[in-house]
Image (tube, rainbow, N blue to C red):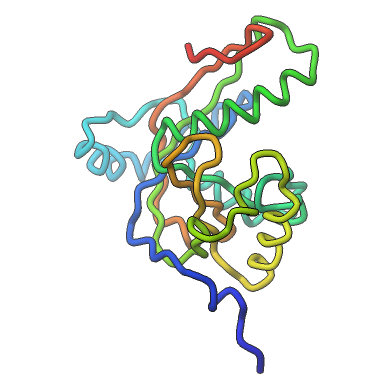
Amino acid sequence: MGVSTERLLPQFKNKENRVFNLMGLKEPSEVERQADPADRNALQDFLAAYRTPVPDGLVDPLKKLKAFLDSAGPFPSSRFSDGTFPAIYMGDSEETCLAEVSFHLTEKLRETSAAITKRHTFQLSLYTLTGETVDVRRGFPRLHLKSDWAPSQAFGALRFAEHAKGITFKSVRRKGAVATAVFKAPLVALGLPIKAVVLQWDGAKLKQL
């Protein structure tokens, strides 16, 4: 029996690492807007340590993440996925998430005739990761190209086929920051809604409101 290539690659051991994600909100229903009431006290206790109140009217991030990763697609093309399998991206801070999302959304909006006053609403969520991910932060320059995703998508497809839970890599849009592509829901131990983030497009750039 052959040895998995994924197991020979550098591994990053996540031990309840705190990471963030900006999820686009598309006018969720009243049911989706409310986190599970049974979880609210636990969420409040957890967030109290960060002096952050549990916000009302936000989507339960862990349920949405698991539903996406367990779905049949379709999936968007991204750095480590060609769209044939799911990947959700986390950043080591709100700033990292904002830099990544703003770059890609700006690229998309520049190709359209979007209204100048168009607003885009995202939900910032805090997650904890527990388990191993493939670590490509050092020695993998072709996986961090700014505009060519072909090498990283091919790499991601191989790792997904080998049942890797995810890939930890350098943020391409924020120097010195770290990001994680999550392939498997068991990597994510906890997900908590933080706040809504609104970006407005002025025809040339995005501004956070």
